[in-house]
Each structure stands twice: as structure tokens, then as C-alpha cells.
Length: 72
Image (cartoon, rainbow, N blue to C red):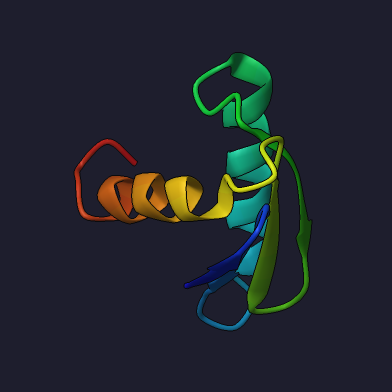
């Protein structure tokens, strides 16, 4: 996971990016992660766009904590 400004890049296993991006988009629409305004997915990479100009680092920390928990 890397972040810069309002962009966070996530890597997944091959074929996993669209599933992850869809889950993040649903969580954003539900208000669970309101700072995410959208995602773009390839095969194994997801670009997450934050509403805050410097929100990528915050998103990265949140996503890491979710990945390490059983809340997923």
C-alpha cells in the first residue's frame, strides 16, 4: 500500500482488485468510510481517491487496521 496526497494505491492478488474496490465503494456509500469518494480497479491494483487533499495517509491507516481485524 502506498499513498500520496489524496490517492492510495492498494495491491491485491491477481483478480482481487475489483472485489476490493466494490467493497470500498459500498462502504463509502453506506457512510462507513465517508472520506473515500471513489475507486478505480484493475486486475490486481486499486486506486482509492480521498475527499481530503491529504487524506491518503489516513485512508491507508484505516484500511491497514481493517485488514488486520476480523471486521472484513
